[in-house]
Image (cartoon, rainbow over all chains, first blue to last red):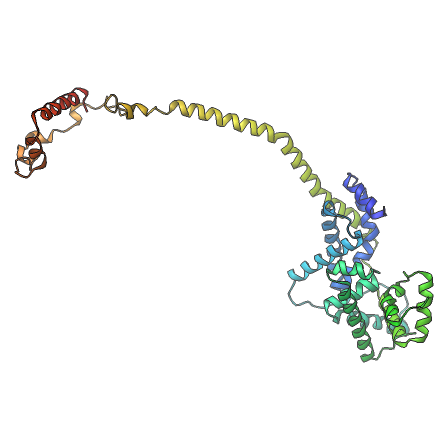
Length: 181
Length: 188
């Protein structure tokens, strides 16, 4: 029995502390996943909490057919979709100040700008392609797990992923960024 | 270990994460030295992984588990208390409701007059109480009127009752007279 399953069983048996431990185990990865979908820190904070609450409330329906992580990501994705449906108005992009303790040297500025370009490039991908790239690259899900989260076949995941990676390479070449060795 | 280009291409995200077994990692590493396409993909994935989501701060990470627990268990405790409330009071409430319905039905049955006698002997009794009506309450309008105004058609040759009575046999006329007498006695 893995750690997640043990904590879920403890919670269902009445231990509320098990929930805190379960959230602590997944909070950073889930936050990062949601951020890459909505690209707004405040919205990400709210949606992460909402996704966890939905997951905890639905734990009695969790049948362990897939891993808890996959199940949680699926709930997070649905939470993001609901959020997109409710906020169809035009989104105003704001520059975010990412806290950094590094000195503002020219190299750092170029590096920061490049990261911002990568972030923007990722956002230009169609949702399914972005989802496949994010889940496979950032969250380390297998092809099978990604297919379960996305609700499609493994073949479709591979297709979305390769198309996404190819587009990103084209975007960076077009903007004159060298892919470092 | 021998792997084809396509097989390795599928493994590149896992290679970038470092989740492959060590012998497969070595095979992919050798392939990357020979294949520009795979090497560029791995470089891109590495760069992507370096772009992190902005950190919301320690306070957020420390309080999130508690907030989730409180929000989820509030609903849970409310649901369980409602369930226990129903479990305790529902049977007692149901028994009370059944008793009330039975008592109400019993009294309702007593108050309802039995009507079957009206069908068996309609002239024997009346459900309407005429006790408070006196003769003064009934105006005798017909007294001041001539007979032909009260019964305008009775002397006409084609009047139905007149001709009908005239056609009765003596026996039939006697039975009718007896019936009318009974009606007079019972007040019908």
